[in-house]
Length: 224
Image (cartoon, rainbow, N blue to C red):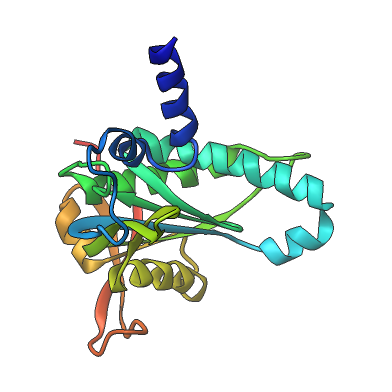
């Protein structure tokens, strides 16, 4: 009856927004206000497929969508397992956040673990009609603004701020350095320099910053 209907409604809503946001919308007494964003330290993971333009030219639209959906499902599992939340699918890219909206104090390390798991999966799994896919990942940690934005009759959950842009720019730098995962120094420090095999790549001038920032390659987790 009502309880069953309410449960189904919650499940339907959680397909479109993170479960924590769905719960907020359904249980808020006064309703969710537009622009109710708040600052929070978080780790942002930005992932982009390599060679997507070539892939889209070779596949029919139906096969392309089927391949992307299979890839999204595969990448979503390690992100969720490490307490991350996918906040946006952007064509061939994924934006995921750790510690926003789902709280987790070990968010930087979890984002790196998720990235390593995704890259390990892509080495052995194929998609669509036996296609091997490769991805580049950038990870950055800092204060973001997260919450619901939009109009009173159409809201969307998002994370915004320069720290989000930095993650996307680190992802793009993988092409320059021939790497697959690049993290910023704040992510390295927050995750714990001894927990992963970090390799200093450069002091890069990331677009949007006036001072160079140290960027690191991640080769793997350090086994205790």
